[in-house]
Length: 295
Ligand SMILES: [Zn+2]
Image 1 (cartoon, rainbow, N blue to C red):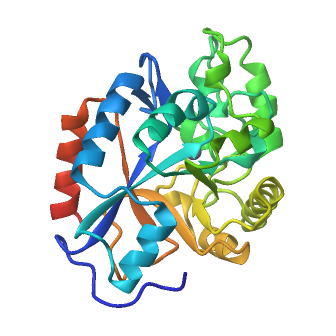
Image 2: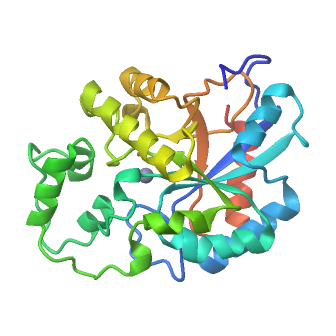
């Protein structure tokens, strides 16, 4: 997809709400980073969405927006970040039951690694230790997301045993499980080592995005076109980071900056709506507010 042309971004005009999920779990607990949605709430949210909006595959929604053929003024697309195994065991059965399509943005270096995602490891550490290079005034999480893989792994080893063990569903998907997602999920890239592409050196960002694209190409048989920036905030997508994504062949990339995708938006800096745990009413309020007020 090339740069979206046409009418300027107008609140209330036609648009796509791209919802962002991470995990679907039996019961939400100690969710420090607000990544989890309870299974029953997720089912209720999906049922409500299906009754209220067209829920389209992301690539088709973007094409329809560009060509002015969206089936309704407001449509929704679903996305999941990271590649937790519960996307297969908890989210997929509900998506299948309701016939809803979604995009899964995979952090490919974790695929089949058996290692927990590093923020979960940090969250469950008994003995918090400052990441290498951190000053006392630094936020350890922010410092950690700029660490390159080797430094980060060394630091995680120092954290000792996790305070709460990891279940299989807390871990990343296995490579052999990818074919089971077909029919409901389309895969996109979410970096290889889940570093902040805007905070690491440009050459590290380039190598990470390219490793992600190659892994997905090997898994899916085609070069991926859709990308979601790890962390996805303004500091995580520097001009160098955006350039790295473009150079690896991705045509469309999403942030975590809230908003609705409208015609005229930059295809490599598209907004999404982060969904938190709660019943359908919580999602309805967030969605209506975003459709009508956020540019
Ligand atoms: Zn992520």
